[in-house]
Image (cartoon, rainbow, N blue to C red; front, side, top):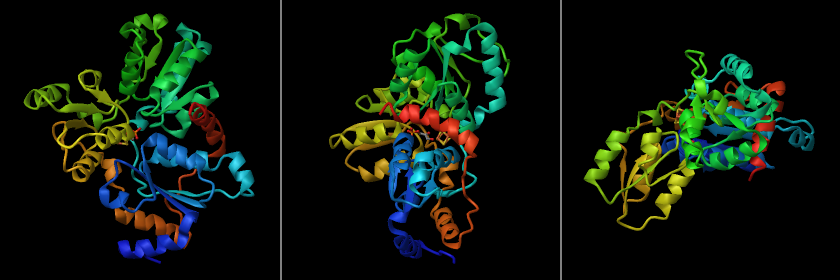
Length: 355
Ligand code: 13P
Ligand code: SF4
């Protein structure tokens, strides 16, 4: 069968009822998010995938690591036991949507880093923490070493927990979220160092480091410019600057507040008519907020910054994902091998158990 338009999509989707759960990240285009059942930031979407007891299939409108996370959480051994071993298929709406930041940390590089760290300090006393924007393999590496996953919505809570377990953290892969969170916690700059994967060299002061950052970054948020923000604030002094913590430190430190996509949305929801905002995050979300809250003045931080990977989650890609379920041809199935899922789940559950 073929789905040609939104009307057909809605009618096929209705037949699935609660057996199907369609999840959408806030960065996907408006026309697609309107067709999803639940929307959220990365933390909320992980929690929904972990908690759902009724669905028999998930379609994920987001990027690859998000579908992997949903697969790992929706197909835990406890859940499989309740379903007599039946797996929930997780279908990624756009199979070409990865996350360039997640791709910046691969297992060979991380293993090399870990081994080199072991030559200088005791790795038994390092906890690996990975941002959820990472491959299942990297999450599994963290799980095997007692480590944990974090999202931009809980990074501080997770790092505080991590530093109660061990003296140091290896933070993967987003240097900016790691640095911004560590500084917010009051960790001195000299105790935050970066593992230079290119040179393979360790900083001199590694022995005093509390936070060892990987060199990754989000190409979308990394373009957002502290200089531009300063200019816009001069032009618009009453505007509140809100940014995502994947932005560079120089920008985050001049913002009034920084937080996950859910945090940014909440700030806008709580605003009063006439309030002014400059927002530094992905542009589909900023545009949506501008349209939903015309009584506020909301502007992008400079030019709009779309995430091309998120943008590929079009309504047509979602139609195709539903067709695959209908026709039982699951080309976009995302299924994490058991031996990786088992360890990655430990790191994810360590996060979810923190609440
Ligand atoms: P959050 O959903 O945690 O805000 O993260 C944003 C992001 O870049 C997702 O890829
Ligand atoms: Fe990855 Fe950045 Fe796109 Fe999020 S916005 S999916 S971190 S590239």
